[in-house]
Length: 333
Image 1 (cartoon, helix red, strand yellow):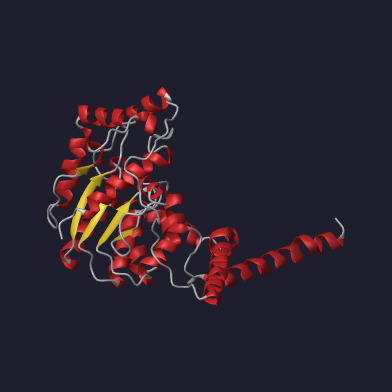
Image 2: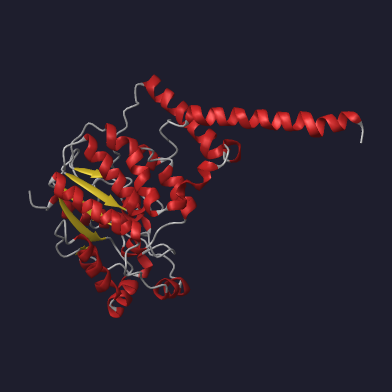
């Protein structure tokens, strides 16, 4: 091997690689405190701290409700803080959003939890939880809670930044650019989003193609009747916050495929889950009967997407939002 190639392989290339790694590490350290602004949930985690409105009701929910309320409102301005997110955010993420809200606002009268039954026993893949929660909630208490129940969530933090350029450098850098842009436009104060249209309780609906295999698969998967440890802790913490701040906790079931719910009832899984939830919260807050939106309307398999989770079409979303809005408005003062 010629001398120039030897110098390149054993001196120049390692020196260049080390230099790049040091530069990446320095950039990562410089950007480590930048609040993430990658998507709507990141913005929501900032909005609960900066929104000046003191809401009467806070809604914690998953993507069934988030998708339905994207364009349709749940009440008059200032009534409902809609903190609905998605499954990868989960119950832990909803709790952390509520904690942030309470740190900057007076307590609401009600906190309504509208999570599908499956959400209580399920926790997303650790990589997705890390991406959606670890980089969004950077305060010490928030990260301590996550790490207590997901010990491996910070494993990638031990890697050099050059091995995790997207999460450690690229996304914080673009979040910083977005912040600078918003400051320049005078729009740096984030607000909790809400739909602007009133839902129609009798909106025309569409019918989805029914996939019997997807339905049978969803039924055969059954339901975890014991909440996951991190979700159990989130429920307990929610009730502790209720004691400390004086708000009432209401639990509701969002729309479920009627065929799946019937199987859950017949097997006793739904009743067992509800009993376990009540036993978890019994020491710190009282939960009345879990309100079931499926008693207002019947949602068949043809009213959902193939995932058997999300409502199919704007018409069914409007009908659900209309029912949810009435439920929230009818809560006792």
